[in-house]
Image 1 (cartoon, rainbow, N blue to C red):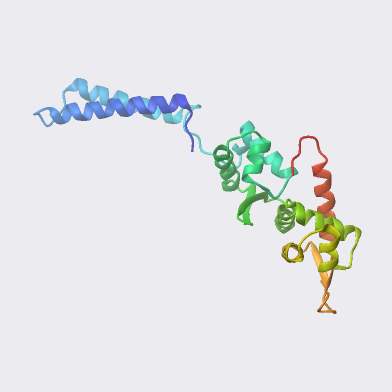
Image 2 (image 1 turned 90 degrees about the vertical axis):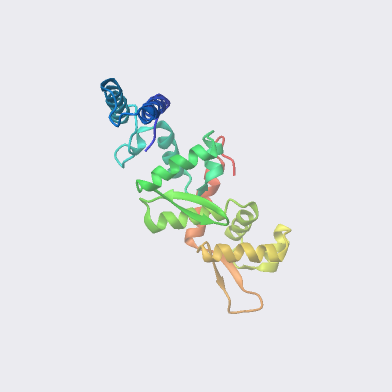
Length: 227
């Protein structure tokens, strides 16, 4: 639940009034407070209850109202278009503070609209609706946000059946770098390999890999979209 500023001010003032009354009652010798003090205590309690139940007050986020705010609508729409995006990227693209974006993303997770997964030290987000395929796509797109991984994938798309040294030479990359990215893409089912020649296994894109790299390339062409 969350309070707006007006409700927060009311709650703080009510708390201060109650604190003052409690101190006043404690300072009196009689164990029972005078009638006027009791009336003020009741009034302060009514103010607190009214603040809680007013439309602008504390509000539970539910699946029915979670998209009532513009921020969460934009977050949900962004993740729909760009599954696998990480927190800072989302916040940057939507011009939000990371802490603010994270708070609203938690609400989307709590209401079972999006899910997150830690990949490479970053939490990435994707829609619940797509199930396992949405998760695979999110993982794949997260991997391909690295330029070297993307270049390797695009090279294999145009030149399937190449081994590590050929890929490294063509892209002017260290073969250890290529091996590291290939391993990640293999685990994400973006590439498959023929290891019949163990000394020089060759790699080629899977159907999933070809589709994801095409989708990712199309995304990068959109105006204002940063890799």
